[in-house]
Amino acid sequence: MKEKILIVEDNPLNMRMIEMVLERDYAVLKAENGEEALDIAIREQPDIIIMDIQLPGISGLETTRKLREIPAFRRTPIIGLTAYAMKGDKEAVIESGCDAYLSKPFDTRRLPGFIADCRLRKEKALKR
Ligand code: MN
Figure 1 (tube, rainbow, N blue to C red):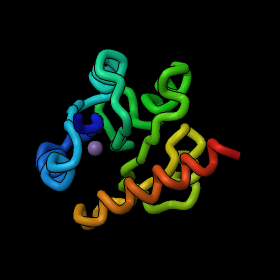
Figure 2: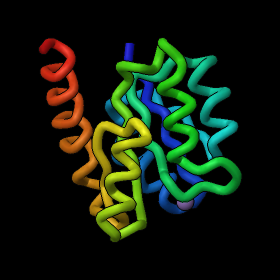
Figure 3: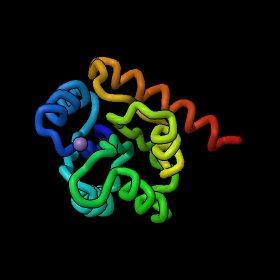
């Protein structure tokens, strides 16, 4: 059975582009905002989460913080997608609980490799 990946993204075109590169390897779940992301995550228990940071309503930072408060999601790899270019904002993404981030715009073809690297690093870190 394919692993589940939850994509949280409010821009339909970005969502479609991300989905296209991941749907071959993963069962894709989609959420357009933070509230929906929390509902779907709790119901479906995804193996990985791709989290847009700029979302309508509660932000991706807040959604990530809320997920990390739930024991079932403490170890789930979460990759932030940020349009911010400033250094302090990148730190905020990591501080919220994201394991890594990609700055938009990025080549979506890089995403599978980026996810694989992120998971490897996280598994190693959790073994320490
Ligand atoms: Mn957005």
